[in-house]
Amino acid sequence: MADRRIYTWYYRRYDGKVIYVVAIAKDADTDEDVIIWTLNVYSDKRTYYTMSKRSFFDRIFIDGVRQPKFKRQIQMRITASAIENFEERFVKGMSIRKYAQAHGLNRGSVDHLQRKFFAALAQALRERDEADGRSRLQVK
Image 1 (cartoon, one colour):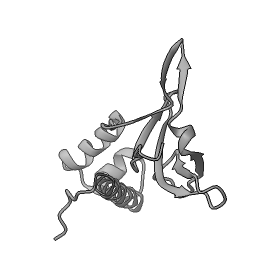
Image 2 (cartoon, one colour):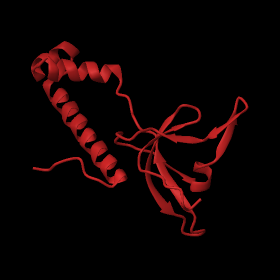
Image 3 (cartoon, rainbow, N blue to C red):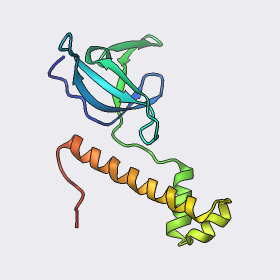
């Protein structure tokens, strides 16, 4: 079990729920590897869970087929609504004022959401690079 590698990344559980592995730690009492994970990566109030490495790599039977409990998600899909919002704001060149007016928001809220989006995107890219052991982002 010790030779199997777990990446800090998104995994899809057998029931379809997507989790994010935050870190791998050692149990202080048993010295066993423990996975620390969360369901909502970008929430201000995250709830963290732990699971043993052995349990993480368990295989389960679903409809008579033995499959892994978790599968690493190589390509995450962006939701259609997020793409529409991005296109409307940046591709079509809507100003913050017009975007806020169209969605019933104030300009400060739009600016806050925009900053939060870019911070989350930068963090996700940074975590991806750290997990893969290489740097794709260039800092100027």
